[in-house]
Length: 326
Image 1 (tube, rainbow, N blue to C red):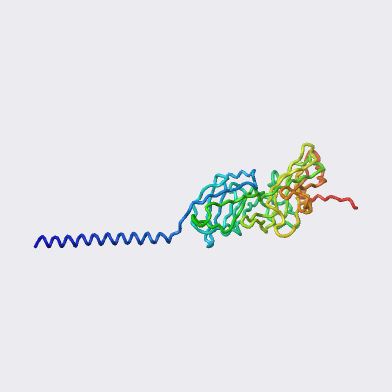
Image 2 (image 1 turned 90 degrees about the vertical axis):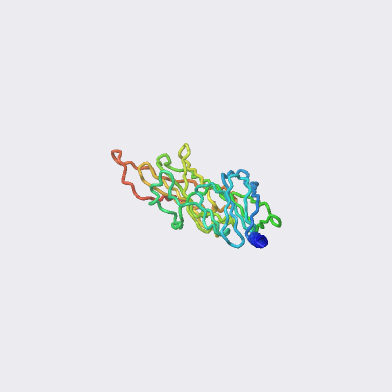
């Protein structure tokens, strides 16, 4: 009888162990079922096609993916200009790409693709040796409220909408074709009088677009002033300078003023304001490289005081040009 009792107890123990094992298996199965509710990811190839900008040489590229549900965008960084492979949660996305290797660029409002903006930071009104006099430099009439900003460096961007990313039913490759979004302008001021007596000189151009919206291929509404450097040629009769910009006239045709600021060898400071709107808007111009030409700039001859002393430095004085009557 003792043996039978031990046998029964052993059967109960074995049954208990089997029950525990069965519960563990059920729990494991239940956990496995829950895994199907989690977001899955897939490998996606990203290709930057440079056929629209074959000379582009960005050190890094950024890809932003905007989920269809409006949640926070995901950013991927590439050190290879041609792209690479990324891991992405399955879903539907809008996408945009921009180069991310320029220190002057500022990214703003990146929460939504249509508001994503590339702009540049503020700077002084004047460039070069005249920068210390920026606070007192007169601003162009009509552009007093414009920010003075840094010139944009090279920018390339592209975007695409409603990309269905799925390993079986969707796409496995994202192809974007970045294009150049920065234009250039060359300025030439001919027949400059007394240029050899100039100790410092600077320039600016008003009414330019403040930024670029790469998610909708559009200029921003803000108008800004872009200061830039100008230099004298060898015979001291011509000034030349170059600047870069996103574009001009974001919504409607605006006014553009070229400002020249000069400090003469006697310390006197002068400024010249020229309306160059017609040249910027000329349909014959190449929109990616506009040329502005000004003929005649009569800088006053310096005045030297007795005994080699210079006169008291005055505030900025405007230079007027008398145009011949028709």
